[in-house]
Image 1 (cartoon, rainbow, N blue to C red):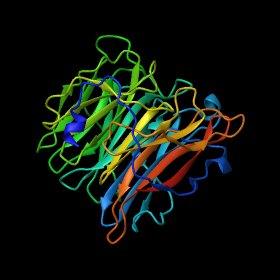
Image 2: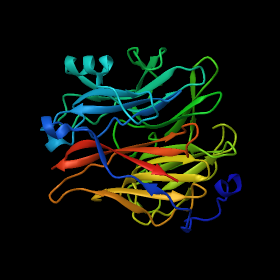
Image 3: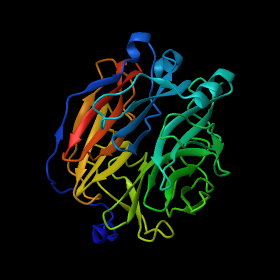
Image 4: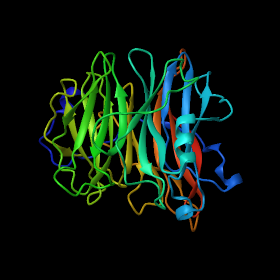
Length: 358
């Protein structure tokens, strides 16, 4: 795995076949249609340990931009049986209070269990007065739970740069998060750079700039290989079938020269996770795509031709933001929870679940 990740000579990786997997039927996890609401962003998922899973989603206005809006707040549900059943919805007070004040929204797209046992939620902070309420972004914030997700603190600003945190991962010592320093979606100026922040033993984050030209790029994803290497992907709006990636083998201190993978059906807002020897990459099939695509790989670089997991209905608009959560239940094969926004009318979406079993 490590050699494959560091094989930076090829400009575009050639897809190879990988072992198979099974994909469950779509299950509606949150039925926004019954209240004509929506929930594109805010798909944070976290394994809190001992069978507990925290599943976050946004409850947003269904009329602004025909439902493609971040104007709303975060809610979450808890499972204590490895995702088989979930509690009733709980409102996340910090997010709801900002919404009620009318100036900002706080949507939580990523969460992680830190090495010290705390649950960390990472929020994008946006201007609620703008119609889409998805940008411009202020500096992101982080909320903390010390009781395994029963309650959360208010958010505290992390870092000085405005931006949107695209992914968060943790190893046994540190938490890492990926951000593009930019008030808007795609990079357009020299100061728009991708950074990986890493926490020290005291919880303080320091940043390393990725060797990636952020012009025309947005979104991103990270995951650890078996050998501890950390791979980071970024989305290129001009080359949606060739996402760029870079690799660190020293805990995020240095990064390889960027290379490109191949995703035959394109990929937008990519989500990356590994279970054992199996890698998965999910996202919308391009900016003008009509659904959710899932790729499979044996090394995190060489991807299969991709499988369309879901399509928008006729006349439907944009959707298919997603997240992936590995679930390791004792005595059973590991699996991945796939959560995504599924269009039900124009840009309005429900929250859907599927299970991937390698």
